[in-house]
Length: 393
Image (cartoon, rainbow, N blue to C red):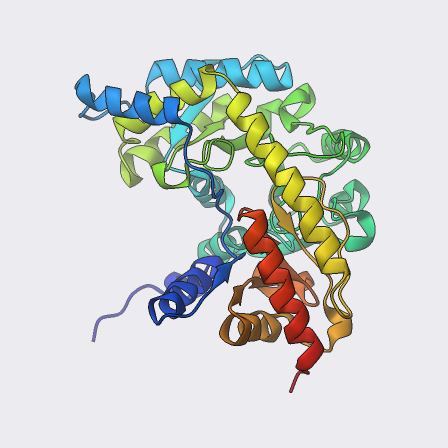
């Protein structure tokens, strides 16, 4: 009998894809399913970006590229970081990767091993914990609390660091909560990390362009005192509605860059060439498309929050970033995953149960408002009917 190594038994899932598959299966049976589960903009990739990708193919960009990405795209990333964050980043520290997960994969592989500890946000993106457990390291959840506006607490985070801590993962604006950590907390975290010079930091800023109500995104790249151990994660999937293009980028401190390059060579060789040229058009072109998309998400955010707070025994604080709401459903009497499953099967509304994002996710569900306002309103009406008529058990 074939035997794979035990580490593969520790790999988790991103249940949003399982919910998507089930929603699609129900739709194929003729069911009317409204999907508020998947974290994917419903807008198309901007036309000028699509055209740049097509033109790249016409121009003959069909071959391998450097494992680190083509220099013009790395230069475009550097310009974008300077424009958005006021930080100078050398193109020689930029790595082009096929999606944001690859940066997580690389960083966690570098620091995860039996005996090591890696801190990660909980509730948080499920791949953090999955990959930590795969490496044999001990996952240490950093509680992300509703009472704190779903921002991380610098004091609580720093208190969890031990001599075995190798890597700290932070995420703001956050998936699944929509929380945005204020500058004061980020300042305090950066200051406190001075006492832990051996701890690397992975800052997942994939939703950095999506903030609301005057909230500003404060990148950890701005903190010079931690730049020599900071890994910055970003990409085109959310900002430019390019999820299927698989285009991400990261900034690595010099001591880690060569290790990341070698991982790229071993894992994926390079990102496909046409996608990289499309990425240049996205970053260097007009950003009006981004502003328009975020404005539309903001409009839907109001609809979602008002509608959720109108549901029986449901409450939802206002998310300040990304395109997710994370309502509290604990007073309904339902366990979160059972509620999510029942809403899909019985009401035709796909959402994700909070425990799929960590142990602190119980009592919550995640809704993505990357769907049309019309569909969101229909989904909320179905949820209201369901909660009014059905009890758990």
